[in-house]
Image: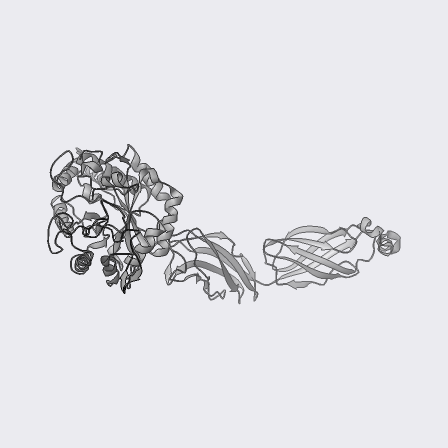
Length: 596
């Protein structure tokens, strides 16, 4: 599609060894080196056809809710889920917050973005990428949290049209740009799923403004041998020509089956793998628009064409996505492609019993087609942001430990599949049940999981905690702990009072740490000792601050690490606090040495 026309008609920019060896050992070394370092790398993208896939999609112009909402209603209708959208990002629009907000919206709506890169317009042409722009793209795109694991990126648009390449076709230049961009993206993150620019299969061979697609691809392969084998998938612009109004039953080049013809070219150019197909542009011009064009088929007929195409042509198992051009365009030159009626005309109203819907009939026809519930892979990850598991527990004592996890993956927790924290080791010995949370947690948000555990037998236990989404583990190693279940802590308080011979009476013992803060009454005898008492609420092998206080005496604090069994807390002498006692003669008298 010739995007440069948009520049003239809209403020929307839619863009578009030889090595000699003497010994066998040396030969082996050289060949090993060549295999390890000179061969084409293998990347870890996911084949989108290995899971249930909803191939229905739509091409949009603006990264806004105004387009994502009706797009989702279209491609995820009638049983469908996780359909596709094709959307363009211009180089001047590398705004992280803007695009992250849009990607978050796509995640909520279960839409998979096919992101097409674009430079920026220069008059009626699109500029060529500047030197090093591949690095800028890789840096920008890698900072975004994508909706799914595969990060689909299309490297520019129809380069066999000169207006898409600074006014002059240059297959060698595009091959170099493609090669460098593939490398930059793959080096940045293995999840980038890199796709070629779709070609204009119907372009004439009239350089410098146009170049036949076959010649263009041949020249690319000469410039960078094996360039097409570096792709993860193939983008096709399978338009029904001539005039974007050809028969849906036509076959071969320049039809809705152009992708089959392109696959044959790829085989002849040495492509040795089955590339998943992404038809990111296709569709018919319809008679309806700003001005009615009676030479074109009507929207009702277009709906029938699409139904036939999706059911009988694009049902091929190699096709991942079909995103017809164009959801919403309100002015020439693309008003005759738009699925949405021109704004301002009668919409959603009944006049004389006739309903005037917001979208043309082919939108309704596509929405009514049966679709699959896509299940694309997402990175499910979590980071423990706050909380920890105690290294020792008291035998028979129950604990509730809050653990705060941050969603650092791509999925929305509890969107459709529940997320829970499970003990995959030590669950029986420590009495741990799976923990679930309420509500949806999006990437970047946090949730508190309250883990309950209780050691019923003394001993050492290994504990492994893992997050699950449904019954599938998160993409990370479990958290591991070693816990010892011990007999409880027993405390005995010792203290004395300045100027006094008898130390009996009521005292208060304050206990403070990162896990507990309490005050317990304590009775000391004449010798200033308490009866040993069990403190099951204290963790063995944990450090606490203990503060002993008595009215009209200055409190005294000691820090001590507790152990299982008897712990003596010796506070030494408490000093009298004279000032508060001055206004209370009786208490002042009791503090003085001659009151014994």
